Length: 161
Picture 1 (tube, rainbow, N blue to C red):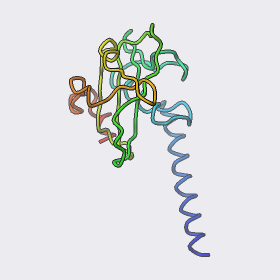
Picture 2 (tube, rainbow, N blue to C red):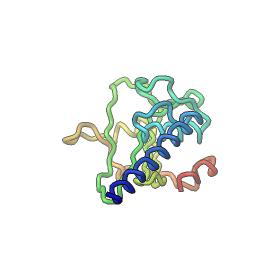
Picture 3 (tube, helix red, strand yellow):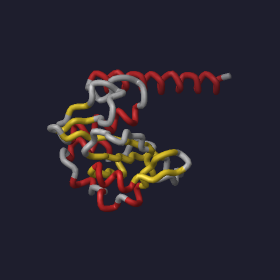
């Protein structure tokens, strides 16, 4: 019985900490809601690093961040070390208004592992069809992989290192 109480107390503390952290992240403008934390985190990161504006609507067509008129589609992943999948699902309209595709890869603990920035016309050349739909394989994007130390605002990048 004591073990169950200890576990319940640990769960209460962990959930309380998580919910308080979410409230703080909402207050700081990182995440507007509790849905799809990983995607929102990536969009916030891009908008912060490049002084951009996130789309007002979470269902904005085509782009997620506007940086001085340049429209970014941001795809973000948090991958366990045991996950071997190295691709991003891409849903887009043929006449999509996108200038740049950004793919951010975090570890399961949200440590920044990889950052790709691909001009949209180049991204279109790399998109393939597989059983999951349209995807882009990260291993085909070597020329677009950014050195993490070269990203702007290293003080923000360091939060995820």
